[in-house]
Amino acid sequence: MRTWLAVARGHLVDRKDYTSVPWGVLAFAFLVSLIVFAAVPMSAGSDRSTGAVSSFYIFYFVLGILSMTRSLPFALMLGVSRRAYFAGTALLALTMAAVYGLGQAVLQVVERATGGWGVEMHMFRVNYLMPGPWYATWLTSAVLLIVLYLYGMWYGIVYRRWSVYGELAFIAAQLTAALIAVLAVTWSHGWPSVGRFFNTLTGIGLTGLLAALAVMLLAGGYATMRRVTV
Amino acid sequence: MTAAIWVAGLTRRYQDQLALDDVTFEVAPRSITGLLGRNGAGKTTLLRIMAGQEFASAGEVHVLGASPLTDESVLRRMVLVREDQSYPDIRVGQAVKVASWFYPNWDAGLAADLLADFGLSPRRRVRRLSRGMRSALGIVIGLAARAEVTLFDEPYAGLDAVARQVFYDRLLADYAEHPRTVVLSTHLIDEVAGLLERVVVIDRGRLVLDADTDDLRGSATNVSGPAIAVAEFTAGRPVWGRRRVASQESAVVVGQLNEADEVRARALRLSLEPLSLQQVVVQVAGKPVADIRERTSA
Image 1 (tube, chains in turn purple, brown):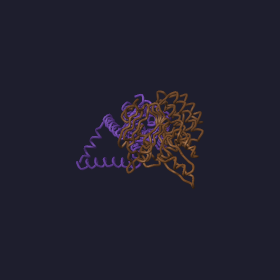
Image 2 (tube, chains in turn yellow, green; image 1 turned 180 degrees about the vertical axis):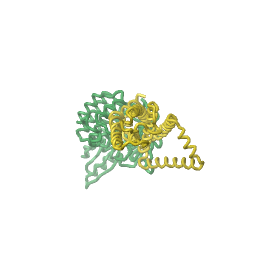
Image 3 (cartoon, chains in turn cyan, purple; image 1 turned 90 degrees about the vertical axis):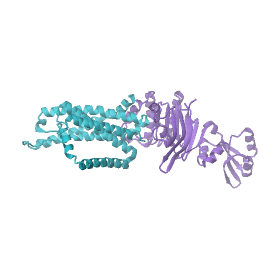
Image 4 (cartoon, chains in turn purple, orange; image 1 turned 45 degrees about the vertical axis):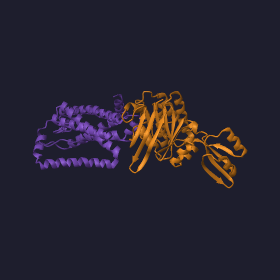
């Protein structure tokens, strides 16, 4: 456990990647959206939502990739085991996701209180995914961030182990799995029930689904991690 | 005494290439061992497997009594500084600070002294460092870690002669105060000859020599002089090679020479010159394996 914490701290030694940069990206995306919506006149029934908040989530995915490609050789030089490195990094992702998720929830509260930042903008109130209340948003946001980070970690691990061709095979395998799933649903005429499932799924249910995905990613990533060489 | 590092039947295959071929040897605790061999001999692969960074195709490695792959506590007592070590995009001081978190015996004072010795500013970004300066950073971390098992893989790449001397001096001084198991791979053999207590030589993945440095010193002697005299002197002795120019010949005689031999050589007007460690290794590493085993055991 001490090693895990040291690994997590190690990622934060140059902490701007986990602090000023993602929030800077988000602030920029926010300002752009705000200016656009301020310029567009309000009309009844128009959709005034922006997907700008996704920039933050994409950045978190990239951080997951970088955590496995850039720092791993250094950690292994220092006698850190693959397991400890993986666990420490995942621990960091979890902690940061909890903090960022709270940030998202707070911004959502502010957005609602200020009438969408004065221009009826929906940025932190994400339709379907994070409509509120704040604690549900916190949870969903945190879990989604973890999923993305773990997914990025897995990409990073595959890259370390099998380089570009491995990455291509990894993506191809995922597409193949998705294709099989789509075909299976189509042949069994299952689309209506799939649609029903997601329509009736509550925010918490969806979060639970994401959490299950996170566990899968954790298991898959760790299984790959055990074979990594530097 | 149990070995600090125990390698048995270690083999590593990469597709069609055999990087390590049935390598077996031991490293005694609290010793400095030179891992010698030519480029591509398998030195880095061997060290990476010792440090758990790479997997063996066959065979076993135990460090401090356990496998570095299954026993994390063993890894925690090791450091491997590689020639091609890569670092995250951080500053020198940050890299040193991070490293310090992983070693209970970390010596911050030593790290600071070494940084100063190498003229390495903690403010500089690792990515911007020259090859030599990056090597210096690896050396700083490797020595200040005071890890029980300290592995250096050609850690001096790009370092000038002065900086290399700093490394050797510091290594020896710190080793004297805090004995530990050091394995140092290198091909600058004569530079480190004075440091090494034991040498392990691998060539094309095979172990070709594993001996105490003291035993190797004087284990082969270059005999030169008139060809007839050389032939008389070397008759009945194992010889590693002869070179003849006109009536002059020189031959490398294997085995320790005694006083009587020296007297005889003088009478024959032969000059005797013991081979340096580097020359011995060059002789050994350039030959078919069976040949060497036979001759070094002679």
